[in-house]
Image (cartoon, rainbow, N blue to C red; front, side, top):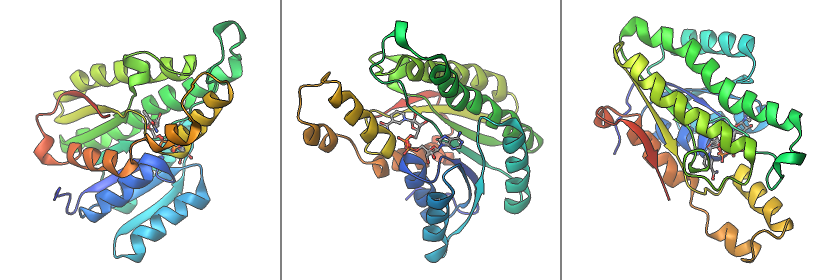
Length: 247
Ligand SMILES: NC(=O)c1ccc[n+]([C@@H]2O[C@H](COP(=O)([O-])OP(=O)(O)OC[C@H]3O[C@@H](n4cnc5c(N)ncnc54)[C@H](O)[C@@H]3O)[C@@H](O)[C@H]2O)c1
């Protein structure tokens, strides 16, 4: 069992998908959790689920692409938790699947880069000074094989996730001297609202010849990814460097 007893964790994107599974998992491992998301209804469900079984979680509506919201959310979470030991940043969006470059709308490009890449920079910008003060901390970011191995269904999504990977390996060197470990996880294809919608969009475009149901059945469970992330967040992973890939 991964030991996160007494750890104070921010989980972004904790309303659904991988972020929700992670919030539940790290709570089971003994952590207190501040959940950030823009889906307040599902975010409340996540924290209620945790608190109902004796965990300790609270929800904040934080748009990670909004600097004022991120700065305020991190400050509030830091006050409530009494510190921040670990950031697990899973908030992200995927749009523009199957759209060619010559038709790719600028507003879609901008919103994906804003949430996925700018959001990653912003949350790290406000969490890292808190960790620096304690000379200790762990930051786990969400990249994707889509951004580092190719084959993304969306040009902007692939670009943003490649950006998160590049940011991770740069920030990891930058924050090492302050006792802060930075890693990214590049999950394969995971059964979440984001991926199921993406599979359906691509299926409608007839780009995949495999039956839709089979494509969805082949996706891996977010709980299996959450198990890996919980380990990454633990002291047992203290020598972990760079990126963790999953199926
Ligand atoms: N599902 C996959 O196959 C897969 C593969 C590789 C990487 N990822 C990455 O993993 C992360 C989690 O994805 P998921 O599949 O669980 O998706 P998801 O859609 O189930 O969850 C993403 C969460 O982020 C939240 N969110 C979106 N925009 C936000 C914003 N501006 N501010 C705050 N929260 C916001 C959503 O409300 C949602 O709860 C994402 O960064 C995604 O890119 C997913």
